Length: 253
Ligand code: HEM
Image 1 (cartoon, helix red, strand yellow):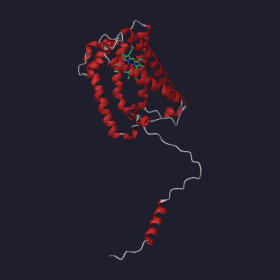
Image 2 (cartoon, helix red, strand yellow):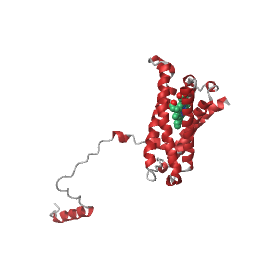
Image 3 (tube, helix red, strand yellow):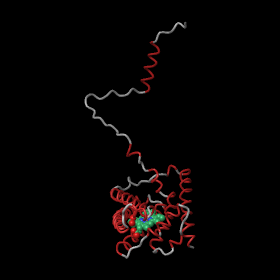
Image 4 (cartoon, rainbow, N blue to C red):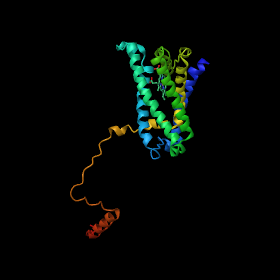
């Protein structure tokens, strides 16, 4: 059972993640979008969406630091374990709260607004439930265990197991005594990866980042007389015919 949960399931989910994206790209490129519902409702979206995305960026940054950077590295650069946990817990709580409130607004909007509700697909519902479970469990682990409770050092268990998956050396035995909320959260993370290619989450890979670096569009005010309108294709063709008629006929020598 330990191997099934902490070795087989993560690799199976990663395989579905990769194969699912290839399938989606080949079969549904036109559906590869955010499926925005902004035209149906904008007030709650304008508040919830930036909160959700900003919170998510913070949470992703925190996960990268907490799961991918070994405690020995932070110690080596002079960050004590105590300082690490203080920053991780406070920044994690702020980012997680932003994410939680943003997600709650996005879900509420799908429930209360009839037009948005009718545009919500089954996969959207599955995705919102999965996201809510992940955020709820993550916040519970952080707040109940590390803010209010006695604390739990996930860097010596979950983080080592997590990195091991990508080094092809998953130490499943490290996960057996992990508190249940953390276990469910970690497994849920992989299940979410398996769902990813079949949901609107694919839009993450098409975020218009080049937009941030594009050259400026230069707008000039139009003072003075308006420029002449560009000639129509028909006018250009007529002018060419007139020119050809005016040209002297060559003698052929
Ligand atoms: C396999 C993937 C994942 C693993 C191993 C993982 C692990 C963790 C750990 C160890 C914590 C820290 C709890 C604490 O401070 O005591 C945490 C917190 C959290 N996680 Fe995850 N997580 C994963 C994926 C995700 C995903 C996909 C989401 C969101 C959709 C998410 C959302 C959160 C939130 C909101 C928190 C609380 C705020 C924070 O500390 O950043 N996690 N997670």
